[in-house]
Length: 303
Image (cartoon, rainbow, N blue to C red):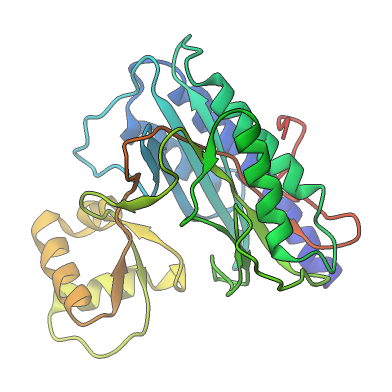
C-alpha cells in the first residue's frame, strides 16, 4: 500500500477513534439525547478535519444501523447497552470503528462487553498475510463462548476499499470454513458482535440509513435534489435527518419513495437480535501486514 495512503488512513483512524470515545462518553450518562449525541459526533468529525462516512449507534438488542431522526426524543437510560459506530473518511479513504458502553453504573452486562473486547483482540493477533478467514472467526467465537455468550453469525467484518464500506470479502465471527486467505495490504475491519441471545439478527423497524447504488434518470424534482445533495457521499451512507433538515419532511419523503421504488437508493433498517438478546460490539480497522497496522487503535483503546 502507498505510504501516503497509510498516512491518510492513520489520520482518519485517529479522528474516528476520538469521536467514538467522545460519543460513547456522552451516551454513558443517563438522559443523554440520542439526536444531540449523533449531531455532536458528526460535527466533531468535521471539526477534526475528517469527512463524515457515518455516525451511528444501536441500543440493547439492536446490533447496528440506528440513526435518530430530527424529531427523535429518545434518551439513554440506566443500564442501556449502547454501541457507538463511527466511520470517517478523508477523500474516500475509510476508517471504521466501534465500541460498546453501558449507561450509568450498571454492571449487568459487563462480562458481555469484555467478551466482545476479547474477541476483537484475539482475532487481531492472527492478522497477517496467509491467515484463512475461518481462523479469525473461530478466534472470535471461542472468546465469546469462554464467557458464556455467542457471536452474531449473520453479521460480519469486511474488507474496505476507497469509498466502499464493504470491499467484497466478509470477515466471519465464527468458523464458517472460509479458506480465503488474508493478503498483504488488504484493509479490513474486524467487528465481533457478541450476544446472550440466539446469535442471529433480523431487520426491525423503519430505516433511517441509506446508500445510493446505481444511478439512473428520475422524474420528480424532489428525487433529483436528493441525489444532488448526497452526491458528495459518493456511495457512502446518508441519514434521514440530513434530508428533512435540508428539504423538509414532505419533499424528503416523496423524493426518497421514488428513489427506493426505482432501486436507486437502498435502505438499511435497524438490525435486532432475533430472540431479543442484548448485543455488544467492538471494532477496529487495520492494514494487513506481518505486524498489522491497526489504524483506529489509539491510546484510549484497551482492545
